[in-house]
Amino acid sequence: MSRSSASPASKPTAPKPTAPASCRGAHLICELYGAERLDDIDHVATALEEAARACGATVLDTRLHPFDENGGVTGVVLLAESHLTIHTWPEHAYAAVDVFLCGDCDPAQSLPVLQDAFAPDTLEHQTLQRGEG
Amino acid sequence: MSRSSASPASKPTAPKPTAPASCRGAHLICELYGAERLDDIDHVATALEEAARACGATVLDTRLHPFDENGGVTGVVLLAESHLTIHTWPEHAYAAVDVFLCGDCDPAQSLPVLQDAFAPDTLEHQTLQRGEG
Image 1: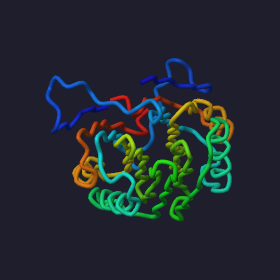
Image 2: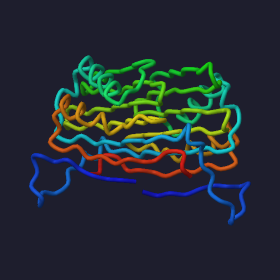
Image 3: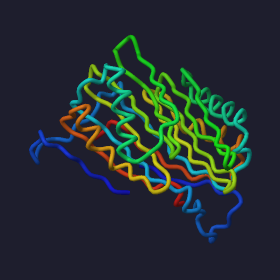
Image 4: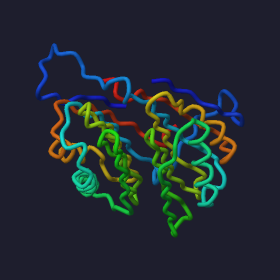
């Protein structure tokens, strides 16, 4: 990972800015390897919405787009608390999933849903704290 | 950041899985502090689509949702190469932006567009490599 900051208005000694607690969030970044049902767009939609509910999040809109060339799916569930996204490559049994939730919701609550829905051999994940400078 | 892996099918000595190069991606994660025009949904949509084009990405769908209670916006631009997302809190001049691009597109090309569109005092960013185990 590279990390950098452009801060034209800040002096070197200025404290790093942060967002107020009310708009900070936790961003779960997942890689699913050896996963199944990545070409089933209805299943993907159902799984993402179930994952959102498992976190206690509120679904605003679900938009999924199928790719004819490989059967993959790209899509988003917009939430009152931020978003879930997914991008799948069924021919490689790989999917990239993000669960970004502001407030008190815990994105890790989505992991059992993702595991059950897509049965990956390996589910790598990391969590970033957003808005903390 | 915490990072962990659940790998029920792998032995401890097994190499970490990776996605094929064709579906790896770069994920730019941005925090905008002291930013402007975060309550202007048309401006946000235009800026995100311009940021996508600056990266050489192909827009599939743009979905933005306004929040009445604070004038904030949450939304996504779905791309053939993955996605851009934004979540704004105009009352705190803060926005969280993600630019996730698979293939040869460089998400850092979006940074000047974001800087120009929202004029943040500080634009923090980091880049994650997706699909590399």
